[in-house]
Amino acid sequence: MNLDKTDEKILKNLMVDARLSARQLALKLGMSTVTVLSRIKKLEKEKIIRGYTAMIDHEKLGYSLTALIEIVAKNDKIVRIEDEISKFENVCGVYDITGSTDTVIIAKFKERNELSKFVKGLAAIPNVENTITHVVLNTAKEDFRLT
Image (tube, rainbow, N blue to C red; front, top):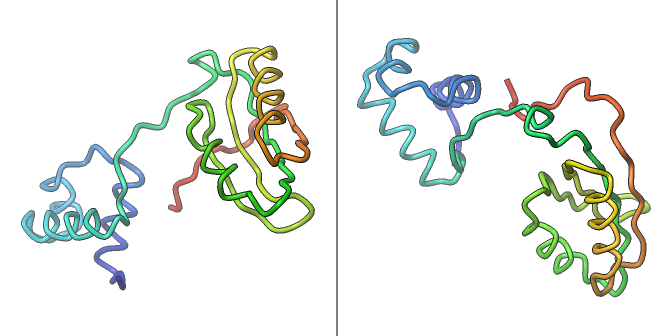
């Protein structure tokens, strides 16, 4: 699907504030509510908009540890490993990457022992050859919106 400037404007506004109603968005962009609604439905149908969510401060919820965990797989089983890891609720991102490792995971934990248990659990997954864990000391920016 090719996005035009109107679609891009709708997406940028929703990324900043997903709570905007179609009416508010239409007023802001100078178009009809029906046009905005139909474009949003089209973007949802095409899975460009996959859902709506709130940005939260994980640390205020007790998730004070963020870890970036690299995984080296054996026997070309990386897709199966990534699928399994993606099911864990504290995993925020799973990336198939280039370089000396196969996958990078971003995950959040409340305590060191949870991180330790998680990493040991990763090592027990069949075909995981090695893991390399990096603990985030400070977060300068954490925002995956492209605005």
